Image 1: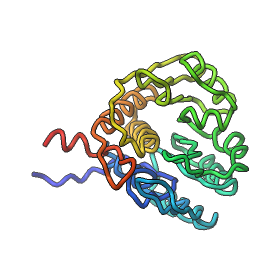
Image 2: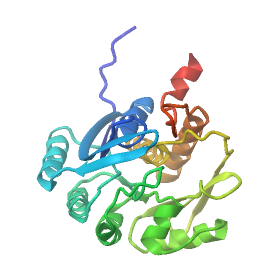
Image 3: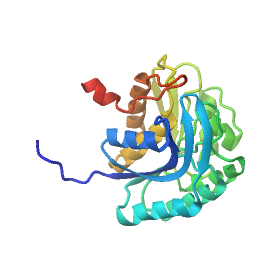
Image 4: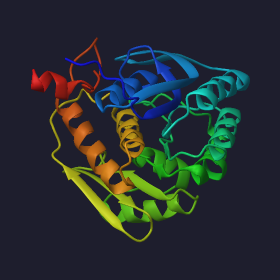
Length: 269
């Protein structure tokens, strides 16, 4: 077999570490590898977490985050950036400033709480997310809990998802992807830029091992954008990938296990 020499598209994740490997930087890099891009990372926080929850979290200094970002972007370059856990207002504002000076699409996953309900963003940072981070986003990907945090909108049905999208778009992202996975019935998401609407539906699998779904979806979207896809195509492909990963999610430890980022490889085998 010939050795491949072409350089794959490069995607940068700016997020926290999940020591259990199911979410955060670890999920992002696994997703990027699975989808054929080169993943790079800027670490914003370290967490001690496992299948039962988050036992501790420590944010990195602003200077460390800025140095990592400049080191990667100035030398290697990026075709897309994805943000996850940013922890504090200072980190949100620093990352937003860096993104504003980078010529690449940005997927913002406005991480507020973990799968287990643990806070991953300081309450005082919410306004910085609204006014600094969302305006530089190509796509914002809040789930319904994050919608409520950012806008106060409590979504209970699909009409509510439309209203939520309007509220999120008012902060400035080009596209909003409202993730309706917490609603009953099909797993439905709404992607809109304020004019075109794309409803993405998938079966709901009876599998509790769904740790890392938000990180995985956002990273998959960023990977698609880096590969040259438009936003609707990238989101549709990401939805298909994460649906398969949820279906194949597996048990680890005594709590909620991760989605399976390598499900396509294992399925092919």
